[in-house]
Image 1 (cartoon, rainbow, N blue to C red):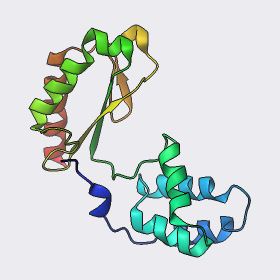
Image 2 (image 1 turned 90 degrees about the horizontal axis):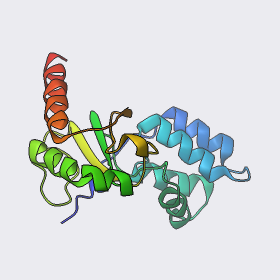
Image 3 (image 1 turned 120 degrees about the vertical axis):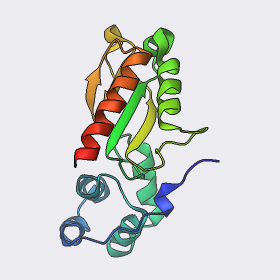
Length: 168
C-alpha cells in the first residue's frame, strides 16, 4: 500500500501566501505563479493550501491539481530532512541504479513503495534522468549530485548524515 502523506499534513496559511494569492488571483497565468510561491515557501504544495487558493481565486481545485501534477517541479509531499533521488534512466539503471535503490531501502528499512524512513529524516525517490549519464549511476543527496556511485557509497553517506543529524 502506498503512503499518502499529503493527507497527513495541515499547514498554516502563511501571510506570505495570502499576499501572493491576492496579488495574482486575477492575473493571466496566475496559477503557475501562485503554485511556485507555495512550493518555495513550504517545500511542497500542501493540500489545504491548494484548497485555499481554489476558494480565494475562484478556480476549481481540479484545475490546480492539473498544474501540480503536470509540472515535474511541483510536489504534493513534504520534504524530509534528507532527500535522496536515484536516477533510473537507461544508463544509470544498466550500471546498477536498481541495486543502489535496494541498498538504500535496506539501510533505511523501507518496505515496498515506502518513500520515507520511520523517523521521516530520509525520503527516497526513483527519478527518470538527472542528466549526468556519463557519470552513471547517479544519485542526489539533498540535491548534491554524486556520480559513479556504488552500493558501498550509500552506506557511508547515510551513516555520515545520521551522525550529523544527532549533533543537531
